[in-house]
Image (cartoon, rainbow, N blue to C red; front, side):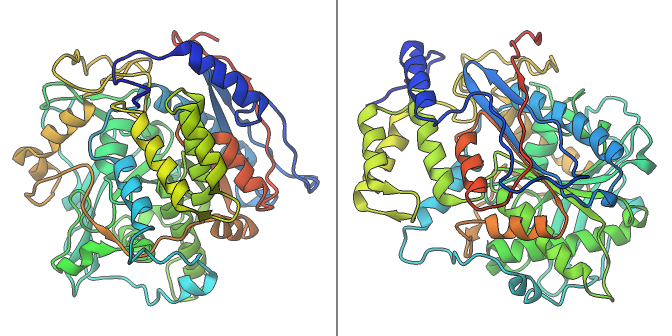
Length: 512
C-alpha cells in the first residue's frame, strides 16, 4: 500500500488527525519546559533553545552546557551559538535537498547489515578503546598551506576570504590520504574559532553535501559550471573545515584496497590523525577554540572523535587540541530510540498505515532492543509504504525532467531539488578538480565503503564528554529521528541536561 504517491500532495486530513492523536499520546510534544532531575549549578549557563512548528512539524533542540563556564567566556559562546542557531534553522528549512544514493540510503544499509550473518561489532566505546587506537602521530606530508590555497574555482564569484583544499596523509605506508576544504571567515578570521564539519552516511561526503549544498560559502548554479554565494554560510561566524572521511569517500583515497572496508574506530583514528597533521600545516589554529559539528551518522563520528581528542590530550608529548564543544543535527546516536522515532514520524505524517503502526508498536521492543521477525516484517512494510518521496523533505518534489531548475535564487525560503545533480556535474569537471588540488577521479556524494564496527548507542560516549566539561548541542529539525524520542533517550540515560524550549511560530514567508 502506497500512502504517499510521490507527487507534491499530502493527505492533510489524515495528517492532522494523526498529529493530534500523537500529541495526546505524547509522541509529539507541545511547547514544554523540562528541567533536569538534578538542580542546576548556581553558575550554570543555559542556552537559548528553539522549537519551530512548520506545517505542524515539531522542532526540538536539546542542549547541554557544562557548568565549567571558565572554559569559554559566556558572551563569546552565546555570540557564536546564537548565530549558528539561526543558521541551523535556516539551513534545514531552506536547503533540504533531494538525494539519490544518500546519507539515508547508506544508513539504511548499515541498519540492514545488523541483521546479517556477519554484522558490524556493536560494543559501546570506552575510554580504554580510544587508548588502544594509539600510537597516533605526525605523518610525513607532501602538501603545504601555500600549495593548498585556492586561487579561484571555475565559475566562482569574487570573495573576500581565503579558502584552501588538498590532501593530508594519515597513513604513509598504505598511501591513505583524506581530502579537505577549508573556508576562512571574511570577518576577523584571526579571532574566530575553528569548526570541523562531518557529514554522515556512513560514507557520504562532507564536501559535496556540507560545503556545496548546505553550509559552505558557495552553491552550484543549474548550469553545473558556475557558483553563487551562500549568504547563510557558516564561515560568516567561524573558520570552517570540511573533511571527506573515511578513505573511499569523495576525493579521499587509499592505495590499499582493504582500507575501503573500515568502521567507526578507524574513521575516528584517521580523522584525529588528519586533524593534528592539518594543524601542523595551519599552526595559527592550534590554540583556537575548536568545535566538531555534523549531521546524521555524524552522531557517531562527532562524539567518537571528541572522545579520542580528550584521550590524546592527556598525553604530554602530543598535540593538544583546544576542544570546546560539539554539535550534531538530526543525530543518529541510539539505534532503538532512533528506530522508534523514525516509525512514529512516518505514522504521524500519514506515510504509514495504522495497521503497520500497530504492528510495529506490538512486536518491536525498543526498550530491550529485542526485535522479532514480526517486528522486522512490519518495519519493512513501513519502509515500503511511504513510496517515492524525498524523506529529507516530504513536502517537496524529486528532481526530474518536470522540475523547474532555478538554482540561482539563494533564498533561504526556497530550494532546488536538483542540487545534487549540479554538484555532481561541477565536481566531476577536470578543471574543477585541478583547482581543488584533487586527484583526477570519478567523484560521488556517497562512497561504497564497507563497515565493520558500529556501536548501537553513542550515549555512553556523550556522557563521558559531558563529564569532562565538553559542551554538547544536539538539535533536530523535522527529521525521521523524531525529537521527542531523542529527548526521551537522553533523559532516560540520566545525562541531566539543562533543557529549555522557546516556541517560535514561523511562516514560510519568514514572518513571525
